[in-house]
Amino acid sequence: MIHFDFEFLLVVATAFTGLVWLIDVLFFAAARKKAATSKSPHEPILLEYSKSFFPVLFAVLVLRALLFEPFRIPSGSMMPSLLVGDFILVNKFAYGLRLPITHTRITRGEKPKRGDVAVFRYPEDETLDYIKRIIGLPGDHVSYYNRRLAVNGKPLKIKFSHKYEGLGDRNNMVEGSGCDKVGAECNVYYENIGATNHAVMTNPDVGFSSDGELFVPEGQYFVMGDNRDHSNDSRYWGFVPQKNLVGKAIMIWMHWDWRSGGNGLDFSRLGNRISE
Image 1 (cartoon, rainbow, N blue to C red):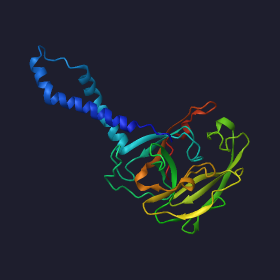
Image 2 (cartoon, helix red, strand yellow):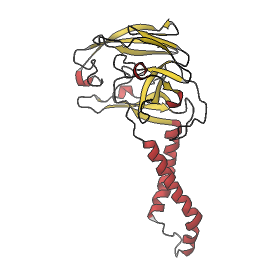
Image 3 (tube, rainbow, N blue to C red):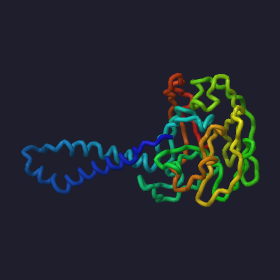
Image 4 (spheres, rainbow, N blue to C red):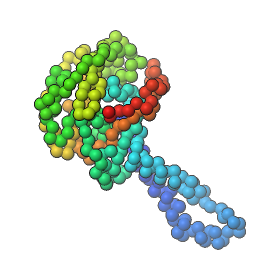
């Protein structure tokens, strides 16, 4: 996910408009009213805009920074669970409320669970937001061999579902990933982890698998994309610190594939729940 620092701009705009309104109330409003010749004294244009926008900006700030935030899926790393063009809603208080900008946690929230789909700040560049599925919790032993996951020595149960046939530009896959090629066939399985039974995708045309095993350190999480052979995740760059967690993805609220050849609006995906 590409991150635009809208949160910073929102905080600055809210603080500025609120400060303009407060300064006027404390120092200028009474004198202006006393000197006015009409019952409705003329207010400076900056004050008018500030009084109009501050309540709206403050409400959006509280809703977006502390409660829920929308995100857009720009790549196919979470296919087939999430598609390019999905707009999702993220519960930002699920793992504890955090202050805007500083990201200081002010409530404990619930503990992340295996199978949660989480949005987090990418550890190697915290200006970017990523979305992946939580596989390993602190203290877990995770292994991945021959495209099979095991947690704490127990292989995850999987069941073959169907072949995903690539349809070129209309299959919602990021270009160059392999499964987007016309005629390409990827395998879709249902995998059980924790309380979730979710779909994952593998590509038999990929001749390598990032095999290995590790222990997850305290305060860290091991994450993977559901599109296992085409996901930049913990297998390549390491763990996600607890402090980097933004929230839990809970629902798809819109789907619109804007690319050339994309499928446009897809009303069948509206309201689909995610981390379940």
